[in-house]
Image (cartoon, rainbow, N blue to C red; front, top):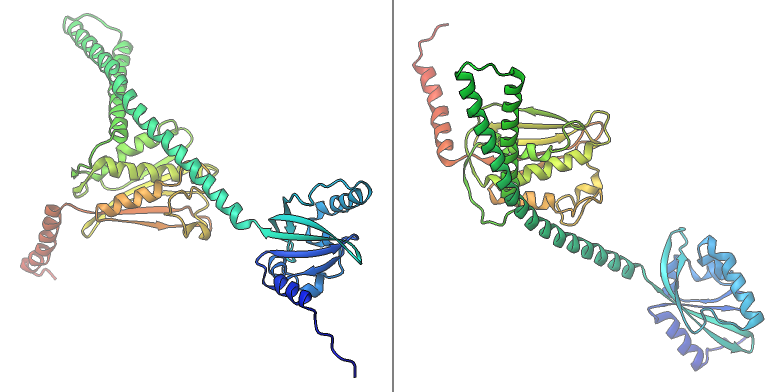
Length: 398
């Protein structure tokens, strides 16, 4: 009976190091055949050691690097010139499932009785690359936020400076209108077209002044200020800003009753919500045949509601999981904080922001519910309670 050879102390130590090492360790001969493939390598590449031992190490590399590796080994044999041995570098590995991942490879050389052998120490860089990518993205977002903050201040200053000459233009136009009225009362014949154009110029100047005033309110730094507000007015003023420069490219559909119960809100903050939702909707439907933005307002029970919908492709299921997370811009435009800010504003107003992701031929729709003002709520309840009493007092006509 043949006795089983027990490993020497050195062999036992080497085996223990190989099996417990956190990094992958491979050993190959001059023909690039794998001689050792430790446990960490099995976890990294997805191969069992028995599947790779004796095979060319190129099987662990992307296809395009196979020939380069063989050429490098041949060149090193002929010239002794080192490209990676004793230096280390970042390269790519290929797992058993074909996926490619970044790794750091350090290579050493050993002269043995069986010839020259190469020892490679491998470390997976996937986690580090992902961390670097995230840090770079956050840094880019912070830089963009700094730029936006500077633009906010510049926008406030520009709105202030533009307001002065615009006010002067309006005063001149109003003076000219009074002069025209004086001439007409003196039975002086004026060209009707000139009078019409003057009226249009005055109205457009007033509209421009109103827009600049709202822009200034949106960008200036101020404490929240809640007051009784008409939601229709708040939504329509925000839409006017959101649609600047887009009137010809986007179809705007506006639905809802003319009169709604009063809400107690900060109108500027709610306008910010409308702007964020409208801009997202415009981006979502810009590739549609007839890009359409649908805005609805209504009231139900103790809430006044508005919704912003589009006819885009809808929101994918994987996007829904991080839809309200900061810095999750899906289209690469903006910082990806609009929905996060919008939900915070709505929740601070004791309301809720709901989303219908759409899909299957339907676009997404965001709905905002805001509680009506306390006195309006009491009036609505009194009115509802009075209705059955009035019905009971009315004679039966059946």
